[in-house]
Amino acid sequence: MRVDSERLKELREEKVLTMRQVAELSGVSRDTIYRLEHGLTGGRQSSIKALARVYGVAPQELLANGKP
Image 1: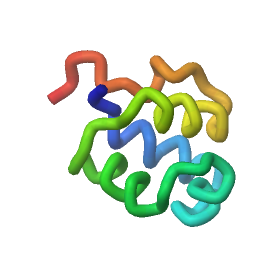
Image 2: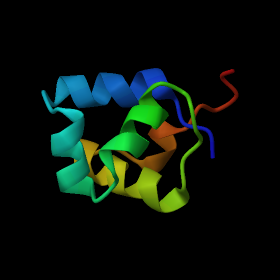
Image 3: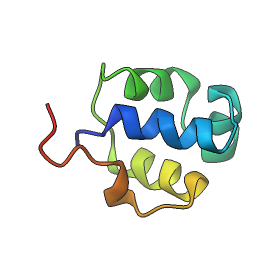
Image 4: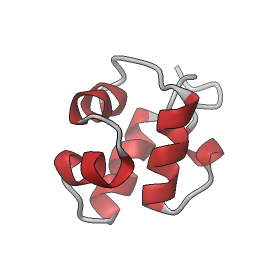
């Protein structure tokens, strides 16, 4: 699945969290979060769901929805 890397970073910054803190809260590795936020990889469904829980949004809000 392709995530909206800009939205992902925006949500993390709104919560004033570091990538390490998000990793601890979500169970998703810091390296994976980095790659997702920089558009270097797509995301597994389980990772997207875990991040959405941390940010308090629906998983669909993290998807690129046709963005390049």
